[in-house]
Image (cartoon, rainbow, N blue to C red; front, side, top):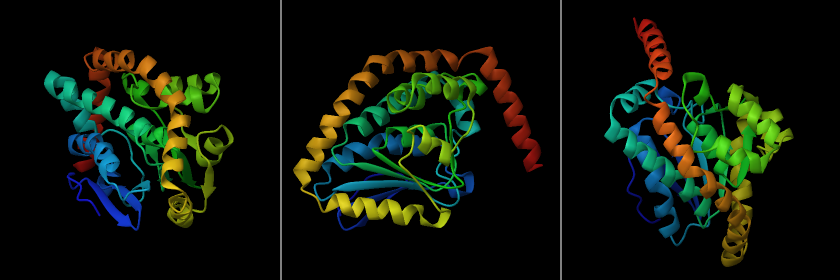
Length: 263
């Protein structure tokens, strides 16, 4: 397998022509910190360059897919303009990297997929969800604009009305509901989600390489146009939202609550 230059928070292993990508902060439920976010930005160009890769499966270590943004990381972003600019640049690279990636990306959603985790699911090509898993994009609940996934992509996957409801409320979308409204392809027993995702990956990997890649490209041209039409505004809006008093007040409450749990 081609060597990948990634942080420890993001693992890539090979199963023949399939690359298994694992979000690797299990003790934090794979919540996003700077290292994981930067790793995801760097991942997709490397996956494209891996000539032996035919399909990628992305999942989470432990009992979650990804629990969203680490509150301490969000706090750092709200206080550090340079770090925020870097993070938003990485966010753009994650979105465009997934949409433009030559190999099909299959999400094996083994648990909660929140915030960026929800975005990774939305940007994947095929989605398998464990019965107990759910999606949620709670950016707005803490005072942030969601720029890198759900609200950008959901209107192409489900109805505009449903996209608005889940983006504006941050409500959880249980696995079965996600499948019913077009945000997931398959719902699996909890212990089978990875096996079923890998079976699909092996099936696609056996098909003619060029035809698979070009067919994905044909399909994703529609998605790419929609994403590029809104992404720059979404990112600039998210940047502004990091400096609002509403976010500061919500973060202070959340961080104080986390500190009390530790004590």
